[in-house]
Image (cartoon, rainbow, N blue to C red):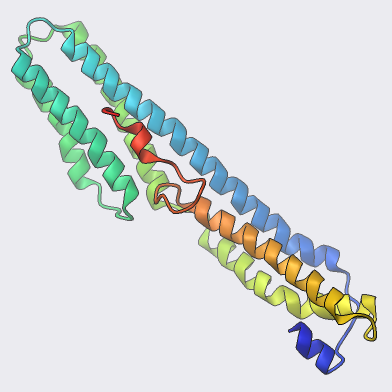
Length: 224
């Protein structure tokens, strides 16, 4: 674009302040929103793992249960943990299989109702409620994104920006001045905008382990 504007001597003076706000403001807003989603995901993952471990400790402390039955509930809790991590790592919106595994905890408590005291059952269900809440919040972050229309708006304006920016830079520098200064300024500006857009795009989905700032889901396994 800059070469063509030099070639055909196209230049004009436009106030870039308003145009910059039209691009930078929504871009920074989407980056901030994506970062908040990532931080919320970390909070929900921590609560998810701690709730599962607490349920595991409560049931393991019950002396009336046989060791085989304790091993069975440990296996169910571990499967809930692994299936949740697997669900988040894949771009799959189906959560039905995970719901069925979580429901196995209720079935286990119901089957062992005579051996598990009422207070212990109440505590287990309380922490399973936290587990359910964490899974639902993580699933919501998993399937929902920042507004797609806003992202499309930013991308379109990033590519349109040189059409207005380059002639203005040429006008301010003067047509007969060093061309490389105009090229350098335009390329640097576009590099910054594209870099910010790519940062937002990688933060948008924090579970795929592609970006450098993505969440390492292996750190949230029960057995680690």
